[in-house]
Image (cartoon, rainbow, N blue to C red; front, side, top):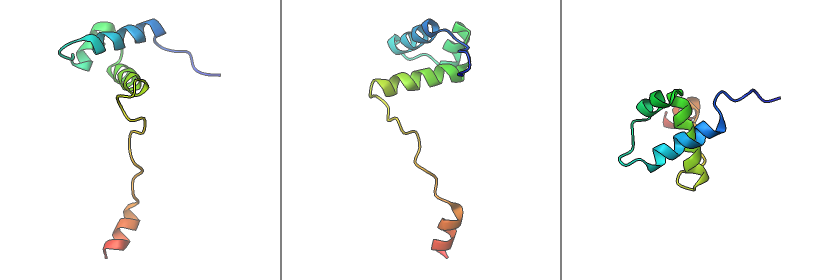
Length: 75
């Protein structure tokens, strides 16, 4: 069973909409503080919204290369 959500969907939608419609873009920490949510939660909501809209690649990082492989190739 999934854990219960800490923040209601309505708050998430409102927070992302406020960020998206603001010009200039607000500082995420400040907006999160005003809304009473954790700044990383807001940052993740914004990133997910951008990915859903096709404005951000869904893959965040490329897989890291092992240091041992890199070291053996350079020596």
